[in-house]
Image (cartoon, rainbow, N blue to C red; front, side):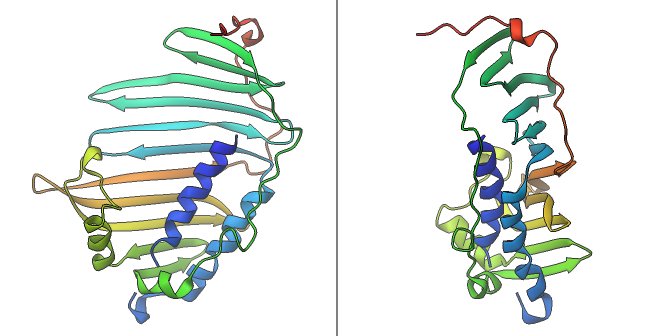
Amino acid sequence: MKKLFQLFLCVGVLVTMFGCSKSKVDDEAIDRIVPAIQKFAELDSFDYEVGFESPAANGKLYGSCLLEKMQLSLLVDLNAQGMKIEKFAEVYIKDNMLYGSAMGQKEKQNIELPETLNVSFDPETVSIDKKSLKENLEVASIDSGKLHFEVKEETVKEAIKNGELNVSNAGIDEVESVMFDIELENDFIKAMSLTIGGKTDNEEVSVTAYLKLDNINQKKAIDFPKGMEKWPSAKSE
């Protein structure tokens, strides 16, 4: 569960690594980032989807989460080399039991979970150097709860030079642009995406990583596979 929240937070923190011309940067767009990240601490239940799309492959993790009951469903879809595999893997957490299914194999095992999960997103944890952020942004805009950020070309080049940005394995040989988009709903982050554009063999290509949340604090139950309580127990090594 902590890894899931760490993933959410890491995507948000990526925004803070890049901070435009004065005419294209709206301070309000930057000011909305920290409160939105802090709202993660108020999440109790939600449906989610985390995925990536690239020329080489695409895939997604999706499911539902009920923090109060410490329940989770996580499914994995993959699409690579023309082969699409739905539910390549499945993971479920219920009643302090971890259930896993992959490649036709199913098993379960006991796990220790805290009675409650306290996640802190206090100002010190998610503080942003606004000056640095603005200096590294070409565009920062807000439109009806939708935030859009474009990183300066020189910042992108510097990140590549320092080895901080390398997406050749994802199918981009020459990076040209980096953009972030965040969609807010009642100050919660409903969706966020990171898009890296460039060229491969002189053709325009892009790679996108994204997060989507739905039914925020409205979920009452998770659909678990029937009979999973009868899955065999994992063999201890």
